[in-house]
Structures are given as C-alpha cells and as structure tokens.
Image 1 (cartoon, one colour):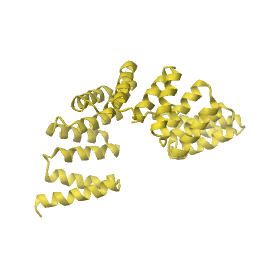
Image 2 (cartoon, one colour):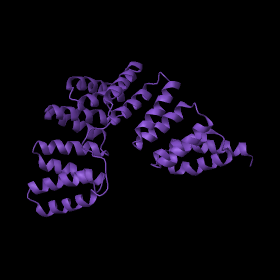
Image 3 (cartoon, one colour):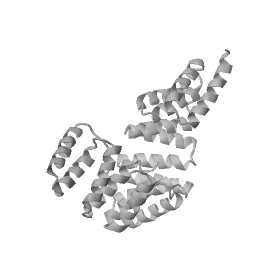
Length: 289
C-alpha cells in the first residue's frame, strides 16, 4: 500500500476514534501516522494532545516539543503544551507558552483566561485579575473567565465583586456544575448557608460524578449539624475517590460524634495510611478552563 493512501485511511480512522473519544484506541493509529510521516507537525501535536488526556504528561510534552520544532509558530500547540505544563504545576513554563500563543492570537479570550489561572496559582493576583478582565473584554460571554475572576475575588474577600462575577458565569453557562459550586462556596464564606446549600444541591445535580460537588456539600452539611446527610455525601465521595484522606478524616469525625467509635477508628487508621501520598484537597473551590 502506498504511503499516501495509508495515511488517508489512517486519517479517517483517527476521525472515527476521536468522535468516539476512544483515546487508547487512537494511540497506535497516531504512532503509525508518525512512523509514516515523521515530519508532519500535526501528527506529533495530535499524539501529544491524546497523551495529555490519558495522563501521560511527560510523553505529551515530548511530542508537543517535536511538533513545535517542526512548526514553532503554531498557537494551538503552544496552548496545548502550556496546559500540560499547568497540569504539572510548572507554572512559569505554562505562562511562557500562553504568552507566546497570545502573541500569535492576541484576540483569543481563552488564552488570557488560562494564563490568568496560571498567574493566580503562582500567587500573582494582580496579573491574574488583569488577564481575566482582558479575557472578558474580548469575550463578555466567557463563563470560565467570569467564574475564575469571581473565585479569585472570593479568595481575597471581595464578596460583592465575587457574587457579581459568579452570577454572570451562571447566566452564561447554567449547566456547568463548577459555577454553582464556586458560588456556593462564596455563599458559605459569607455565612449564607441556605443559599450555599441551594447552589451545592444544583452542583450535585449537574456533576454527580464529581468529587468536589459531594465533598463541598458534605462540609456545609456538617457545619450545619446535619451529620447523617453529610455522612451520605462523604460515602459518595469515597466511592468516587477511594482512600481520599480528607473524606476519611471528616467521616471519622462524624462517626465519632454519632457514637460509632469502631467506624471512626477504622477511618482514622485509613486516613493516616492515605496521607503518605499527596492528593488534591476537594474542600476548596475549583477553577474553570
């Protein structure tokens, strides 16, 4: 079979597998494309994109490096590598790639939002606010930027501004569980437990497979003294994330308050073992991409 013909067949297979979201099935096809046409930057980009979503970040970055070696001014590849660096908490490198992509696509709202996220995690809140605002100036309907700016204002205690932003985030994307989770966290921080619970309930309805939705609601319910409902939510957290030390600690405390000493001791023991490996803390608000 001629190389050109085989590449055309492989391209159709890539489209079908991508439509099915069969990322593992994609890899051998992408490997073959690169074997046949190693000087095509798109093939390297696509394999890097796929490996990142499969969690193979180092291999993803290596493929994206090769793609940029072949096509150094590709904004999509710079953005993808920046996102991979962000996933690794290599924030300075992420910011550098987002900045390079912005030079090539200066009117891309999403790029400013992503760079703002990196600045925020790095601790430069002024730069983060500038980037989120720039994202919104370019696209006032960018729900993720509204949500991220609102969450940042929550962090620094500017609650009226936070509420304004999160209300707009929900208006533009009322089906995103993160928006309701973040506004619920804001209401909880403000002491408005009723509204916080309403938003957490909606976050759970929209994101029933997300650890954060159940975890944040469990924290609020426990704070309200509603221990049995909190316990049910924590059980759901531990089904989604078995061995999560934060969930085990809180569930152990609730068992202890309810007088279930054996169950409490079991969870505390499991928690101490689980803490040997670091995990993200689901008690805090999350960010939109």
